[in-house]
Length: 133
Image (cartoon, rainbow, N blue to C red; front, side):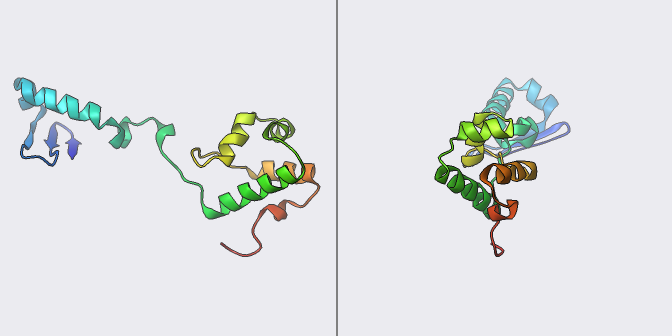
C-alpha cells in the first residue's frame, strides 16, 4: 500500500519494512528514494491519477448485453456481417466487434438502434427486453 499526499508518503508492501516520512527525507536517503520510485513504477496502474482515462474499465450491464445479443441474433439470422452493420451505420467494423466483446466498453447508441431497426425492418423496441431485467 502506498499513500501519497502533498509532501508525504507512506510505504507498506505487506512485508516487515515500513517507510514513512517527507519527500525531503526521502531525497536524503537514496535507498528510500529508490524503493519509492520502484513502488510507484510497479504500482502505477493502481493509482487513478496515473492511469490514462481510457484504462478505466466500465462494464456493460445486463440490459446492454441483452440489446447487444438481440442485435447479434437478428444480424446472424439475416446473414449480415459486422462489416455490413458498420457500413449501414457509417462506423468502423472494429467498433461493432468492440460492442460485441466483453473486453471493451463500446455500446450501441440509441441512434444506432434506430438505424438498425430500419435495416432489419423492425421496431427499435424489439431490441429491448419486454420485462425489467
